[in-house]
Length: 116
Image (cartoon, rainbow, N blue to C red; front, side):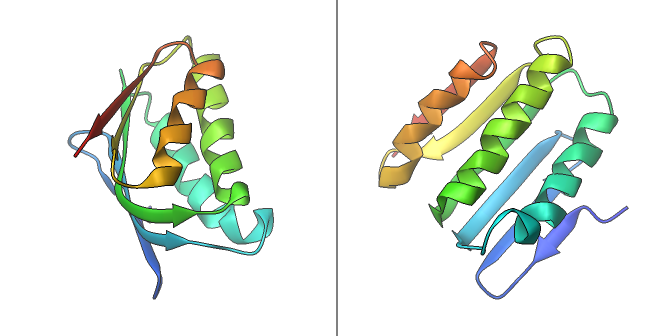
């Protein structure tokens, strides 16, 4: 089971011990088809039936609208798992990450932690 996606501009990987999905770099992929490997990785995390999932995006400097939609769809999927807690760690210094608060619209059991 591949738990890491590595490209020249970005990296997404999972720490199975903490059920944390880390994102770093710049995610500027061309539409939903190019995001499919990331969606597949997130689906694998859900299939492991964790008690909570953490997304750590503090090192993700940019994500386009297609990528944000992937995060929203994942929040919906966690809600369908019985309001599975979703903890999101981000950075106050990266402007796009302020929009992460909208994840609560898709799973009310989302906790957003923005640090400096």
